[in-house]
Image (cartoon, rainbow, N blue to C red; front, top):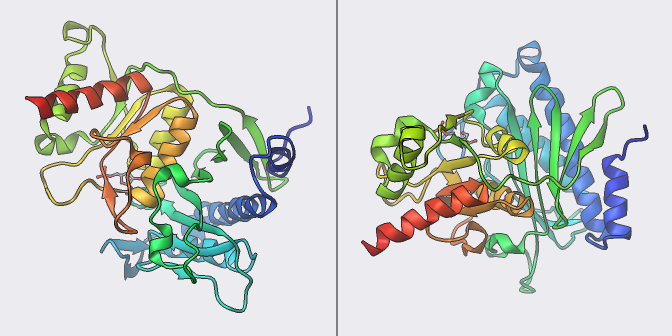
Length: 337
Ligand code: P6P
C-alpha cells in the first residue's frame, strides 16, 4: 500500500488546504530532518559515549545532558542557513539566536525544547523534541526577544518528536493533528495517523503524586476524587500514569485520552509552574486543542496567555476536554469561596 510521506503531506497542505506557505513547508521539513538526526544520536547512547552530563548548566540552572547540548546544536545548525527564519529560541539558550548576517532571513520564528524529558535519557525511557512556529509580526527592525512574546494563538505550526520504541513526529499546521512514523530503512517520515481526536472523557490521569502536599486546593480536591474511585463522587475507578517526559505523556493522551497536570504549587509561590510556556505548554496546547482537547492554567486558556518573558513557566492542565473543564470549574469555585 502506498504510504504518504511527510513531504507529500506538506505539499498537499500547501497546494490544496492552502494551510501553509512554501517557506513554512521548508521549515517543517528541516525540523523533521533534524529530529531524525537527534533520533540517531539518542539511539546510539552509550555506544557513542553520549549519555550523562555535559558539565554545563542551562538557563534554568539545570545540569545539561550531553544529548541536550547535541540536540540543540543539531536544530540550530539545520535551521540557520535556509532563509526561512528570522530567529530561534531554545530552552537550552538564555537569549534568542538571530540568524547570522551571512544567511538570508525569513519571517518565521522557531522555538524549541530540543530534548524534553532529560531525566529519562540515562535510563532509556522515551524522550522527545518539542517545537513551535510563530510569524514575526513586529515590523520594528531586527528580531528581538520581544518578537517572540506572542500568545499561543499566534502559532502557525507546532509539533513534537517522540524517541521511543518507534520514532514519531506529531504535527499540526492548524488543520488537525497528524502522526508520522520514521521508516528507519528509508529514512522517511510516513503518515500513520490522520486527524487524531482525543476522547472527551477518560479514566486515566497523569501527575507527579510526590508533589501532593504542595498542591493548591482545587487540584487536591480533583485528585482526591479520582483516588476515591467508584465509591467516591466520580463513581468510577481511575488509573494513573506518569512518564516524566511530557512528550510521552501527551502522546499517550493524544492516542487514548487522559488528563496531564503539572500545576503550580506552594513550593515556590512566585513560580507559576514547572513547565515553560513558549516551547512546551504552547505547542502542546495547540496540538491538544486541534485534536479536540482542552488546555488551561486552571485559571485561563493557555493559548490566550500573553507572555512576559521568553523562558517563563506556566501551570499546565491539558487533555480530555470534560476532565480539564472540571478542573477549571474547581479553580473557579475555589476563587469564589
Ligand atoms: P518531574 C521533563 O524534565 C519535564 O520538563 C517534562 O517533560 C515532564 O513532564 C516534567 O518535567 C517531569 O517533572 O518533576 O515529575 O520530574
